[in-house]
Every structure is written in C-alpha cells, then in structure tokens.
Length: 122
Image (cartoon, rainbow, N blue to C red; front, top):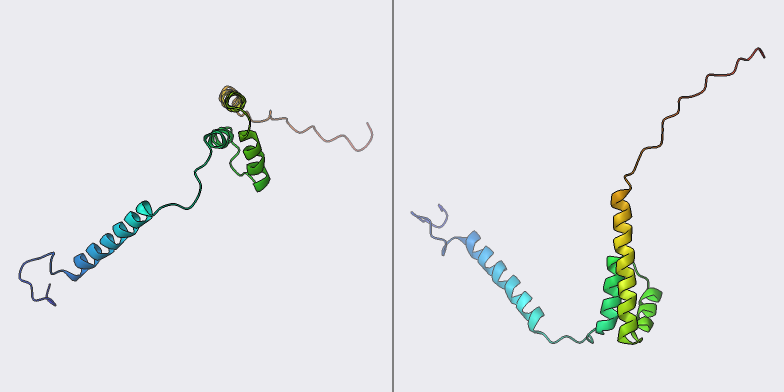
C-alpha cells in the first residue's frame, strides 16, 4: 500500500488483485472458447461406448489399439448382442467384487522351523 500511496485498501488499485483478476478472466475466456469451438472428432457410437464402459467397469482400463479395434468390431453387432455382452461383463465385475469382499486376505500360517538334525547320526 505504501508504493501506491493508499491510505485505505482499494482492490481496484491493488496490482496483485488486478493480476489475479486478469489471470482468472483469461482462464475463463480460454475455457469458454474450448467449450464453444466446434469439435472435429466424430461422435462415438453408443454401442461402442457401452462396450468400452463395460470393459472399464470390469477392470480393463489399459486397452491397446488392438483392444479398441476388437471393441469396434463387437460394436457392429446387433443391439441385443452388445447388451448381452455388457451384461456378462457386469456380472463378471460383480462376482469378482463379491469374491474379493468375502475372501479376506489371510496371512500364510506360521510354521516353526524344525530343530536341526543331530549331526552325530544318533
């Protein structure tokens, strides 16, 4: 405040507050242009999205390009088959979660080491 010769605080004359305002305004303007710009990518097929979602929920996150191509081929099937496939994957997920919850990770049983055999042959 001493540099600006202010006797009372005025946020309109505070250089730091003005910089924060400019940065926030620039960030909001960038977000606005990103959301209003037309997208050039094609919308994803709902059947493909259902398959990828089911794979993700089943725990298969790191899909390779071959996996994506296989999912695209599966998405070309009829709607009933894609729905059944997604249902199977969801059942697999539920079963896995149920088994994981019902089977606690138990430590292996402790076994005492055997006494060393007598070396004199007796």
